[in-house]
Image 1 (cartoon, rainbow, N blue to C red):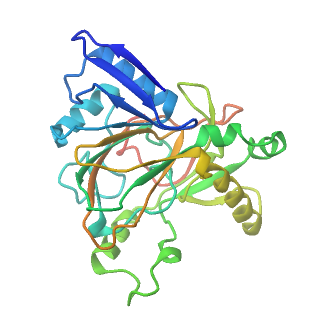
Image 2: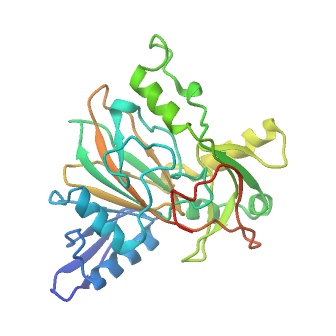
Length: 309
């Protein structure tokens, strides 16, 4: 299924749907800071509808162009609240040299102002593997039975950047992790953040309800640790059902943009020890709001430097 719109230069922007619940490829767009307002509007509309959109053949784009394009969609944040050792303050290298983010998550949910949008550009890809999978958290909520909705509509969860990496260490490696990976993880957790978010948030642009979960969840509020883990896994399984996902096979020159308020994603670590590097920027979002209008609450840490209110 595809749709199209004309920009003033008569370049046709074509949106090709990739699945019934999530994902579309956008053709006819040369990303950059000079994109027309009509083309930007078409990109934004496709993003809100399909949750994650993909662009082929953007090899002309460099860091500056990625930032210039991102600025047309919103306000670019710092690269990360804690990772400071990067060449550009606004660009986070997703580099396999420092570990692999192979767990389901929504970006930076441990702060109060969760990024609205993430833009990821391929820089160096392995010859095989290294795909990324996205899941639609709006569709996951909408598919819940009414009895489960009644349960989760009032649930809250504590999110933290003190993620339990130890639970995912490869036991076959002596020492668990190499020095570079360990240093990166220590920097990731150098400042501790904890924020209490509603499990069901209301999307500020579409009004849709979505499940706000992922691997930064430390626990659910108001239930025992055993019940918290059981409920979390039940809801996570709903999010990551294969029918609710789209898998993107990266090629040189590819760019992916996702609505971070309506998705989770997972980078598949199936490329052995080969190098893989992508550059990510995020756009500032607002504080999540529950169904009854209650805003998320900071428990620890001040992330005001990361993203504007």
